[in-house]
Length: 112
Length: 116
Image (cartoon, rainbow over all chains, first blue to last red; front, side, top):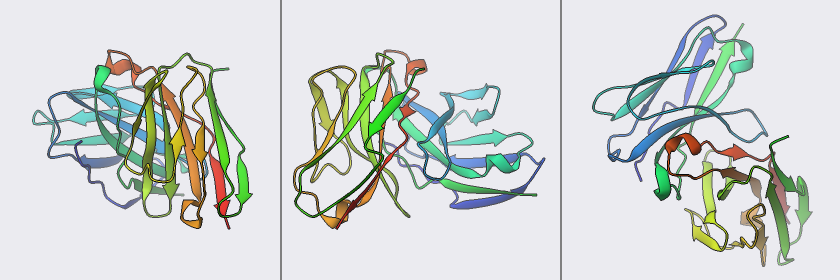
């Protein structure tokens, strides 16, 4: 399983774009990258998932360079409600989906 | 409403008293998993199940048991709880199908367990 490294914490202000980068140097060919958001005392919630290049949905974008050794979650125009812990997860896709290892996560604090 | 439910949500018990935390999902998901979350250690996987009667160890399985007799239920059993199992526990499920599109995990609300 690919080990992931994220910044422990980040600070931002309302209305700014936030980019959180995750390093996964030993990602395998069959691995996918998924990001989750977690609020205190709640279960994590899926944000976005990708394999390569760029993926965008209604809440975030995920940028994955060609070598796939890192990925960047981009949150446009954050608000106070985006204050949470963000986890980057690298896992095998398809029928091999099984053991999963979450990293430490990044504590994002959005200030007024 | 599609959801993962856990019971109980809060539990205080004593060392050695067997307990079970139930987990149920109504989305017909094949994959289910248990995690524990401790301050500074993030989420750690305890056990997972790819389908009925198929279970396997995660990163921290010691002291826990699971069973998957039905697709919708995945109980977590602590045969002899100890204080170091005091933690916040989450159950999750996903389709676990052949395409990565089905690998979004849906998490339950959590069970806060205290072992005295």
